[in-house]
Image 1 (cartoon, rainbow, N blue to C red):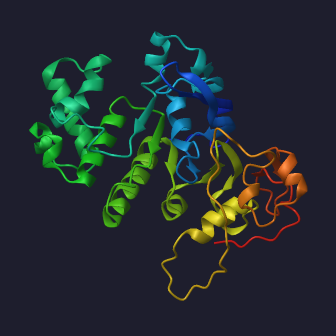
Image 2: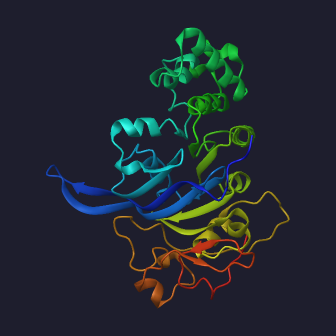
Length: 343
């Protein structure tokens, strides 16, 4: 079958925001506004894997859940290509959203918590098929569930077992089968291997790649492990304190980072080569309180290059020139005046 056009965005996120009120006392007085996602914009092209990376609390998981409206966004647009029609998921009514969610599915971080321990594998994978009228009787349901189990490389004889009878990797395969039950176009994978052993991680990642090639799937891959991201992604969006600070291809981000925060992530990631020598970058301070975002660039209190402009003016995310003609976006006042170390 012909592959999808990689230049066509399947999903466009425009100025997405999610804010929470921080309250105190029994009167619930508002003490501050937490900007979990603060003006995020990106697109996901058909057939690609876009990774959202960053430290815990940067807003990447909230972004993924806002897209499926598991969390209601405060504002912004989430435009999805619904068979040639560009639809805004934010403004959809519940009936329209239920139909759209058949084409956008999620894989969650903890495969044990995301599976109902009181349901069998047949019930777990078959539930979306029954709810959406995709199964014509018990025999057809069994046939479809067996086919899905084979796709994720699980023995069909497991259909009558419960989640506690499986290993973590097997449970995640069941979760993947459930996500694929309705033939989605976009799969949002929220840290899908972080709860698994390293050897099992490789198996699940390989399985996801195989399924992507077979089914033409598009992935939004949420992760913090850069080794996983390097293997799995086509493009990478780096998030810090609710905003994207750098976005480009995998090669550009790993070999020619432009933002000091990206450099920090790369150099703090362990390397499997004991002979490799990398310069140590000292980063002071902790991630700021999202309810008390620093003035100017949010990274300036931790940045070794910070100057006066960084403390007063917020840098926009702009597209900059790349030697290979590849799109590279960065939010840094000094990107063309500093030298960063690549991975």
